[in-house]
Length: 141
Length: 293
Image (cartoon, rainbow over all chains, first blue to last red; front, side, top):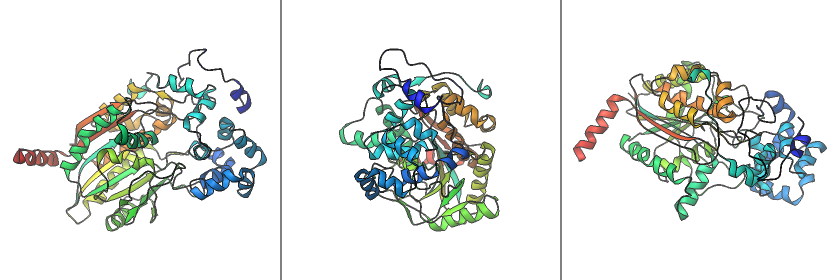
């Protein structure tokens, strides 16, 4: 599933019960952060991690496109940032902990990223958490 | 000779820190009050243990390091360690004191004798991996020096569980070769079950977390033999951080015993704490308690 149709799959809040998480490690359930993703997202992460400094957060907010240009962020990834397409940014190699700095800078939180990933609104996700599962690895049974 | 007197395993999350600040200002959110209450006994026990050095095994969340150079294992050596700005600004806490001589000894011993090729950091900003739980266990300003060991838990490949067990054992030998009367307490911190991205966001496996807490004191080998991928499948990707707890357990002797544990699941991360003491130390603490009673 691509980021686009995943995001489009978002259901309006409160309609269907939120399904319990499964135990596979595949997208869209999970994105294991691999060296391949790290290579792909190097410029994107460098930009995002620059926002650890308050003066950089200010500069980004004042001119996001010029700011991202200076870090060599691709036009594709810049569009994802502008669209707050958190799922797309993770698939572009943005590490969650780096993309979280972008969310923080524009006044969003981990919940916005999670809700976008899970295809639901923030309130629905918050109501669904904790999403309790009970399976155990073979070594614990 | 210095001795390891005990250890703590404890979860960390950004919200744990933010809820502490809010809780101290205006009372704790009902979801977080149990964690505050549940960590009070550890705080008292820690004070009674009178450690003179803390070794803290944690993971950075791209708040000090970045992918230009992300070390698998790094050790901080310095007079103090700053709090990292994670994007929201710093919380109102001071720097943590360091112990450069002890830190240099550990780094030298771990490289030469333990054969751990550590990255040595003379300037290391600590993020919520340390700052989120620390205020629950001790009031600032803090006086016991901290030596942080940062372990990569954010990008594959992660160090293996068996490697982290070996790190704990090597750390024990390094402390035993430190020619002072230091009382060293080892803290390992990693979130328990949680996943904060993907459609599995918010996964909560309290059965797994409780099993882990109950088993770690006498079952290190069995827990370390479970593939890290299984922790990620059943507890969420970030449950891999439980492997950090192996360092603490392996740094203690086989005779060490659990003196306290507590578990709750406030929102999106399993929050557990485990305190362990070496028997000789435990009895001296108890006798001191009897004398003052």
